[in-house]
Length: 422
Image (tube, rainbow, N blue to C red; front, side, top):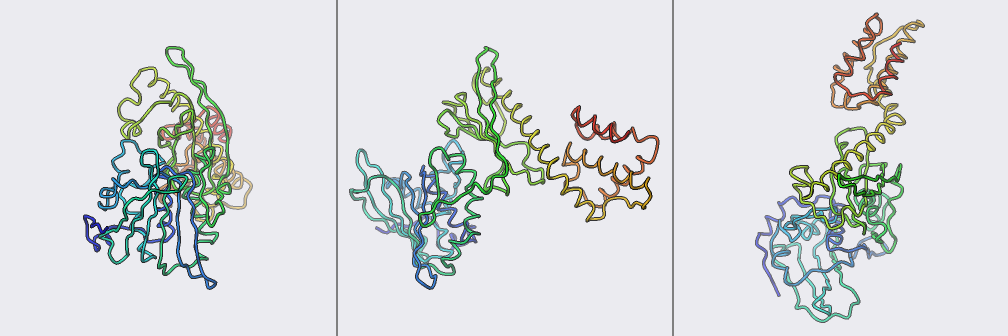
């Protein structure tokens, strides 16, 4: 049965669809996870010359309910996901662009879907052609002999894309970076992505992990245990940097942006927090943004605020350790390569002053990397020049009070700077 969408074919083409085949595939994978799938599989059928005959992307999700077609397929730039009251990592798409994205490299997309209908299962298919994206064709639902619900989208008439591209290390790395955080978040639930039957790996992206736990007491002297799993990734991941809040069943209740999203020092991190404290909670977007009351009861609010303080303290320690162990050396090399340091003679006095300045810069960068991020090279060169001049006078001890006005220092950081200046 032919059905028209509420938008023209030309408008769909100009609506900002993905321009890269990898992103198109990612859209369909997210659609599967949005449908509560745990396994999404990409299967590529090609001939001996590497030309792709078809690409199928299947999932074991809930399927596409027939009574939602007018809304989910008939309305472009809209979808059922958009109207959900809660956004989490489980719901990525909101504008329904994914179902039309196939037109970048395929002439037809066919969805075969199995959904629950009471105590039984029914199946039907939907078809959209590249040259007529303003309409879709769906069959009548029929009883299904399948064992589980799920959807398979088959992309045919593939052009401008070969099998080697979708089986390359570059493509697998892209999927690992896009979905690695999500697969790790759900690893105990068996979530996976497969390419021609082989699960993709994301463990190679993990640079550092740590597990700890906090026990937080409420004003009513109730105690709550929070199990915290910290991960530092090797590369940027397919999400911003969050604290993920999980209930006792490891289902994500909500997520909160960490305070280290704009540091520009390659500190790629995720923090997963599991506790029975989150059982039964539903947090809205307003709550996640920090506006209003996060929880209805005062006890819950107090515990949550204490938790966030603990998490930020922990993450700040992790960041400082990362900066001290790795990032500061990169920054010092950058200062040398860009000729931002003062010029010194070969005398012993100048050599020692050079060492002292580098030690001071190192401590300042560890204390707050933002002091050197987004600052023009000429300003950094001037800033370091003034520090060097102060180091040559009997007023070098005044450097610390000046620094403390701009950068908050811990006791240990203050002690190290005092030692350097002496």
